[in-house]
Length: 226
Image (cartoon, rainbow, N blue to C red; front, side, top):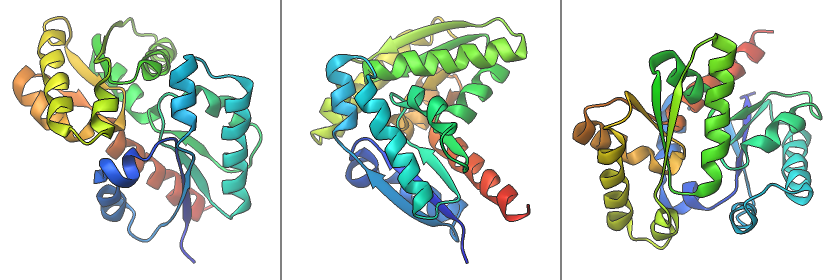
């Protein structure tokens, strides 16, 4: 029987806009059964208030528990903004729960000292920066983090205007590159632009999607051999 990975989505971006993650899952874990849990009201709610309140925490916890109840062997939360909900949620279930940014933020600290963090949604910056700093503290490494927000770009992407969204990201990356030695995309929705941004900046760009999926596969493989 195949292993099951539950994916928690807080927008439709990976369902019908940026569908590259479907290809990554098919490539990296073709034999794994995927279960998609989607609540596209969560991210707008958090963006509207700028905070994760008790209601949002309860909803995310309920989705993780539902994933466990459906027989999932592990959960991958695909939303950077909702990352802070995962730590308390992990204590309520028996299966591994992975934040999409966990592997990427560790890699950023391993590779960089002046780290640029780019986002198109304000609520993703804080959680991503916090994870980078947490990893730096654990490694005993000093890092300087520079944040860069392309305000409104995510809404433009969701409206279907990829070209305008892409140009906003590229223009901002050119400026950010003057201050940093590595760039981190705080949202998987920007993954498609990594190679292009590397070309215009000459810097390595880290994205969460592939690293998270590869890490999730390693977690599932470890469970398989217990």
